[in-house]
Image (cartoon, rainbow, N blue to C red; front, top):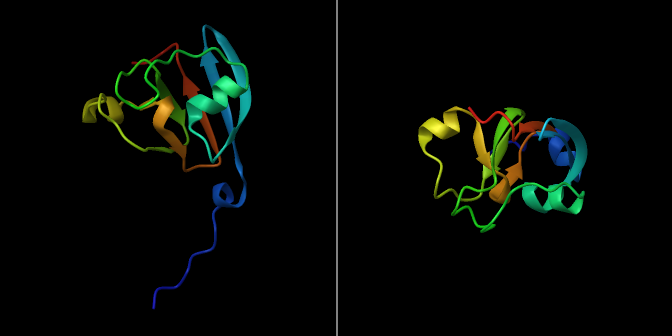
Length: 107
């Protein structure tokens, strides 16, 4: 029988702290783990780029500079893009308790 591991800090909290840079401005928001990253930013009043909301178009691409997320699906980013830290906000689910993303410096 496999021993159950204790929950991580990210698993204990319903929210993830997000620091994001967009158009030269840095903002801090709280991300409810039950919704995609894109929805959390839009709910916080941040006007980020997006289009399809399904991981198909790449309009919501941003660079993950710190932390970890899981993409629920990905039809546009190559392995090279993923190694560069690029993520799709519309299909991102949190793994770590905080993340830092940047829309201004993608490469």
